[in-house]
Length: 115
Length: 114
View 1 (spheres, each protein chain N blue to C red):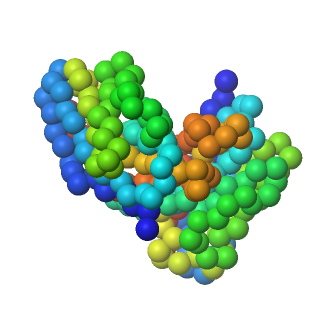
View 2: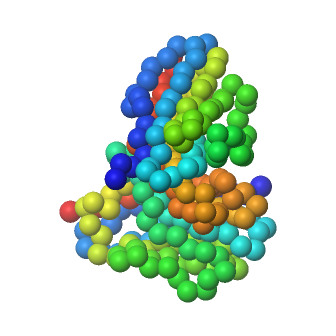
View 3: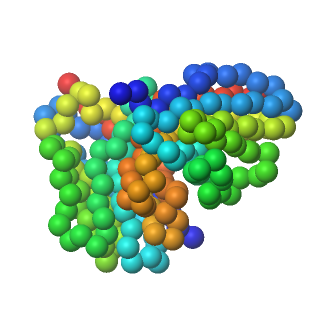
């Protein structure tokens, strides 16, 4: 079965510090896309960052970067210089060529930013 | 440029009733996907519509059905509502240029079944 595991139900970080959210996944496919989405109280899922599995270089988007370890099937998200607006639920997800129409999601990590 | 819009925002229904949720995709998008997000969980894929046809379906019963109109907007219908159908229903649109086409989500419809 294709699964995504986010082992941290909740994380907290001091404003301006760095936090890392963990994600592991299970797929037998060799090529796939990995995503981190943010869901604030407004409920809208917002794409934070994405990574294609065959690309070895880790993706970065401003303060957001990933540590992609394909052999370990690990895809963690690092948020640098945390801001109050980063507080939200963060979901890890992936899409394979075989299931190219659907995203497989983790259960999410609630990120709390302490001022 | 309007993003994905969903209506209504909230809905309360009784067990056994039927409900219709609506979604207008982002301008220029032709593909609509529906997801169910139960409280405290990640979204689960219901189905996707492209060219007015259901292209792929997740593990949901036939009580869940949908439709896509020529203007690419979409409806999700749920018949014979169960308490377990209470959830946030998310609509996502994309441009069918391939499996790397990013999804854009609406704010969802919160359905409560009593």
